[in-house]
Length: 78
Ligand SMILES: [Zn+2]
Image: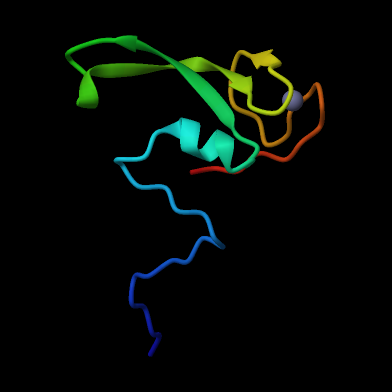
């Protein structure tokens, strides 16, 4: 028997659908910032591009990696 209550605690990180990624940037959490284009056929009306930018140094990569190849920061997945 395992106990699963479905509650995952993310150490002090609160990201809800209503909070923008900008809040995460303000919190200083390293992550990839995906560029979006408006596309009504996607949920939320936005299509997330594969390309993303390091929130720490602004380095742009063509796909998400675990570490930024430029500044070496470890990324947090939301
Ligand atoms: Zn970086």
